[in-house]
Amino acid sequence: MSTLSNSTNIFWQECPVGKVERQKLLNQKGCVVWITGLSGSGKSTLACSLSRELHSRGKLSYVLDGDNLRHGLNKDLSFKPEDRTENIRRVGEVAKLFADAGLICIASLISPYRKDRDACRAMLPYANFIEVFMNMPLTLCEARDTKGLYKLARAGKIKGFTGIDDPYEPPLNCEIEIQQTDGFCPTPGAMAAQVVSYLEEKGYLEDQ
Image (cartoon, rainbow, N blue to C red):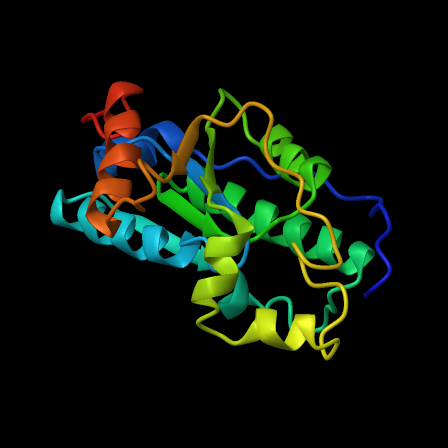
């Protein structure tokens, strides 16, 4: 991980076109929908379904997928705790920029540590950080194992895997919690609808 330090002799440059003007142009309010949960809990499924639903409504969103970001922005980071923290910090800063641009930014990452998610929340003003907890049991996530990672972790071939030999700290006060009902997982459409309903209720999809 690169060494971070506070820059000096820098000044914030204001621009006459701000967030309010951008939101009026897009007819929506910028925010961050942060989807967290174990590997295999359905984060990416929800992110893509939500993005599709917002697009169908004429609302502009962008998905920041944890795996995708490790192909570029965060490709220099490992899965050590300190690098995981830096991974989330970088994504939080990018998500903040998207929200400031007036977009609905959908961040989909395991983001296992509560303090890192809380640090991202603190970056945004006016409660524009919407934490979505994919509260699916480990047994279900491991049974899915679409990427074969749980099998490798159980065999000791992957160290520090969340849920196996590294902790996942669930949110304490998330805005939205998605879980099974009577042992059945909600469909992608139903999950997206739950988030869209929240966005509508809070005025994020209203014309500005």
